[in-house]
Length: 271
Length: 93
Image (cartoon, rainbow over all chains, first blue to last red; front, side, top):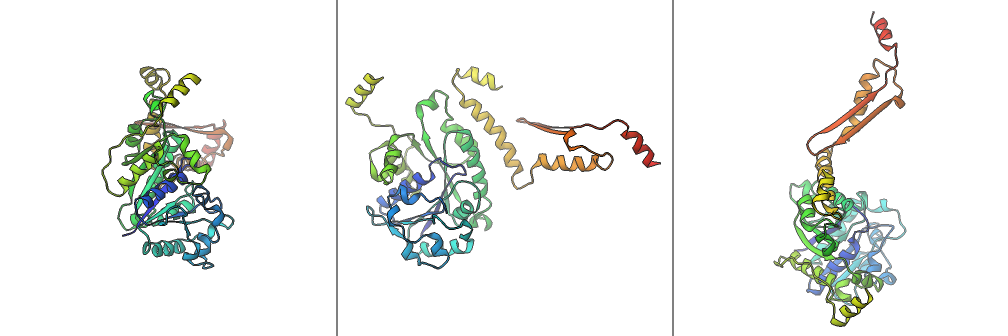
């Protein structure tokens, strides 16, 4: 049965889009049929991070308004044949997104996909509430930083009250995904620790994505980090997170950068 | 308390401070969720009561709230011009 998963955070710039692309690609790499939907109307970026920006013809709002069919708006990934993208509109008014319209699209997609990943815009306005509206599960992307944790707490409250599941008296299954984590700084007490964040948010942990240059490298070339460099620390962390989403038990470790001997020597000399 | 935490965990350890600030803040925000903002509500109602008896200058009204882990304080400072009591007494007669 299809699962609708919203990737959300409240705060902007914490890695929602990067994480949607990476989780979506990782699920597809494991053989699942996946569609990722960009809900950030007016400021779409999932297309860019996934390297599909030049192939966008129709978008989410075209489908809501009946200008295009869902099948016309879906863009198939060039690298993974079971990964699809439904882009957001770049120009139209975000009020064009309606609860009813989104509900119909999600219902249609449920018939054809294993996973429907909704990339939420920042904030708590219409785009964000509609992205989470039909979710079965939620990934709350959180940075180890006070404002991000506060906003995550707010979003958790909304997931528990404003979703269709919550209104039916059911629960949206929530997971915290900590991104941009620096284990060394946390050990020195300069950064909130994983334990601190989980205790405050009282929500189970899906994964820990280490701060890494590979994330920017991947978005530079328009490739989800799990595809661009599968051996990199963030890619391994996202793959672990996806295995947990699929029900596997995977030890929670923070993948470290694998540095070759030459690399270490050079770095030491440079320092 | 925050200074104590900082001392306990070394000079650069700011994370314990972040943690304590968040815990206090979120305890309040969770309590207020779905309700109108408490501070604003109290301020409006207190001012409505007072202005039934006194002509208030909004500039002369200060409302402060200090949130703590276990208790919070609301401080309402209203400057009442002299001679007001006399006029109320006159009106009551």
